[in-house]
Image 1 (cartoon, rainbow, N blue to C red):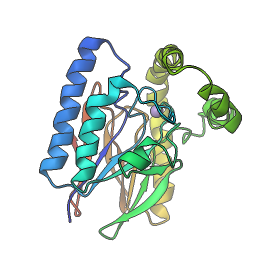
Image 2 (cartoon, rainbow, N blue to C red; image 1 turned 120 degrees about the vertical axis):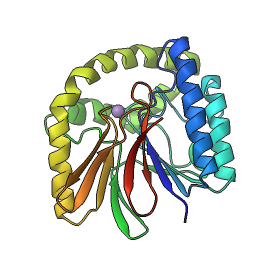
Image 3 (cartoon, rainbow, N blue to C red; image 1 turned 90 degrees about the vertical axis):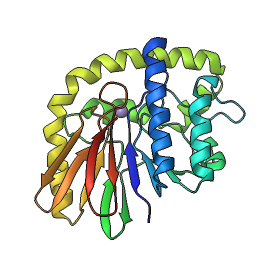
Image 4 (tube, rainbow, N blue to C red; image 1 turned 30 degrees about the vertical axis):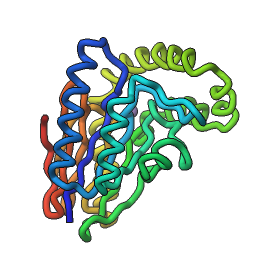
Length: 243
Ligand SMILES: [Mn+2]
């Protein structure tokens, strides 16, 4: 049985073109590594794209190279699992990833068993109790069918421009929030491990972590634009690696 890889918070398309070129080269290397390893699973734990919206007939050309690599992986038998983050929430169950890449799409933290280990996986947005504003104000708007319907009416080029403005604002907010949230994530993981989960893995905080808690592990895949970290499960142990 092949290995399972976990990555999150690539924020494709979020940066200056210079940084974006470097990031994409590393991401392609990562995807080639998965292919070389004959991996079984690729878990994308959210915020892979700076912005994604499943239009019926449009995909953004800025993601073309990466989507081609993902298609190759899918064709070679790697199961792709996509957890929508707060930046790429609008990945629908019958959308591009599901149809073209045979990906499984998740909207909530989900329990998955791999080689008799129990994983709890998710992007992690809204986990921290003190993230009240996101959970009660922003998330309900993002997930409301009416706002999704209205957003679809905006021409894609404009929608992308709007997302850039929102995304650059939320990034500033991300920096200061993270350290404060870290202990809350660990506490959350601790309760899940007490309930019998072996490995709790999230993204969202951009803080690469692998920490033993009682009989389990809390891990965070970090990010793939500053830290370039990812997690591997070789069906025995969990490792946090750096590209
Ligand atoms: Mn996020």
